[in-house]
Amino acid sequence: MSLPIEIIASNLQKERHKSGLSLGELSRRAGIAKSTLSQLESGQGNPSLETLWSLCVALDIPFAKLMETQIQAAQVIRYGEGPAVASDIAHYQAVLLAACPPNARRDVYILTVNPGEPRCSQPHPIGSAEHIIIMQGQAKVGLASQPALLNAGDYIFYPADQAHIFEALEPDTRAILISEQR
Image: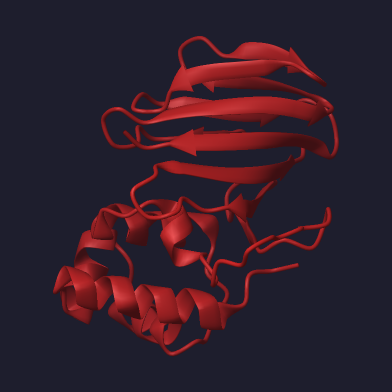
């Protein structure tokens, strides 16, 4: 299930206004066209993971802030039903399972990744860390300079404030990603 654009639009507008940035300034900082940003804020388009990530970096907010919905007392997300966003440059899809509550700094995702171009991530803010648990398949994961070969059931922790990579070695590799911001 793809993430409803209305949720992204609402959260993007809220965060941009909170930051005090104009459409033009945010588009410049994020490296995207002003018309693209305007369309996203009006609830049109299908933004890629990279576009949303650029906006989050420019707004200095966690990625999950653009994907958050109202918090409920209890929430069950069945496999394949969570809000998803896909990459334009790799066979990589992230499904947000739980966003950080206020004053906490943890986001939980389920990843579905296929062999092909690896997902190479630039360093996140200083103090960021990631935990990954492979649920199915096999992947090279971790710091770009020293990725580890992981199989189903394996876990890795690494500092995400350094370049890091996720490369699926088997079709439909699935993993849990816990992203921390300190």
